[in-house]
Length: 176
Picture 1 (cartoon, one colour):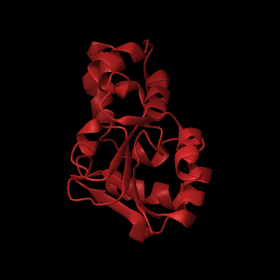
Picture 2 (cartoon, rainbow, N blue to C red):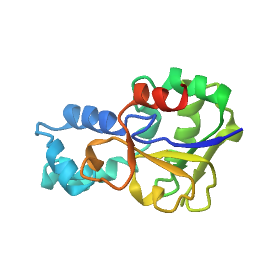
Picture 3 (cartoon, rainbow, N blue to C red):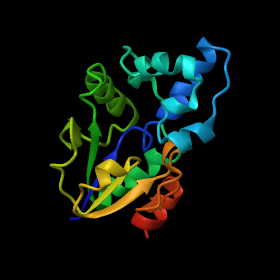
């Protein structure tokens, strides 16, 4: 069975959506998605004076637990899980609160993915598989299999990898 490694944040968990929702409730400031694209970072899309607070939000209890699910991901991933050996892989240890929160989030939103299929790590360089779907090229550069860059506001300038636009597009690749 072919193995597919799938990132969490900005692939199945809508981190940008969660952050922009939190920011809108907390501050009265414009979010600049063009700056996210230019800066290659979610944080760069927020006013400069708020960027340290936005970055800090990633360390706050509850942030990762309450992220929205990426549109279309649940149904496509459930079918992929029948056809492939799926592992959800997240470089999570940078944000210690995220470890338990990501586990609980997966159990709630993707109960068909077992705890044995969830890899919460610091670096993805040790991961092996046939395919990897990730929103950060730094993870894909280390991967030996076929790499797909999942489109997110911060990676729109990147051209090195084949893209997956959304989960409907992923289905057209993996569920033919």
